[in-house]
Length: 257
Image (cartoon, rainbow, N blue to C red):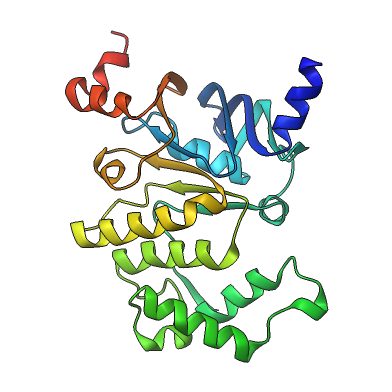
């Protein structure tokens, strides 16, 4: 009965089981990471630089430069460990990059419409005119300039615009689970508040893994769980009280001499 109950619970979760990950040069970065993120939950993954946070994000999304040597990743009970990034996206996984890359020649609006239509049946795909209207409405909410439809993906975007672009994509794509890798990096306080407020307004619609180095974004987004990742392992899991502990003692309390 316990196994049946576990299987049912995992069908509504992003499950990371005993994950070991190494880079192409054979260096092991993650050493047995396990997490379960249910829909509607916010999990903050914190840790010092070099602890493996971004490696975890890249491995979850299927970046071929990060090799999973042991463990599994399941989306709603489906094993996606060996699937390509586009297949994982089709199952509802979204990654917001720490430093979104510029892609010359790829129109921002066309890219988003293609992504939105990817999993829709032909008769339900949104038309260019309807999507243009929807994107302009969202661009206004996100305070983008009106020339957004003529711009290429992230090309010439400021740091703040790149971060807002990631969250705009999140709002349009409506994933089942989202991984946001340091969405607060490089933002001033106004940009941080805007991004945090928008993420909070959307977070009940999906399961969220929020990766961050600093505690400041957690003053505006209250996670259900805090996980401290140090040296490629989960060193501690707790609630928001754990943030106060980290503020007081830092990450050195988890680092073995």
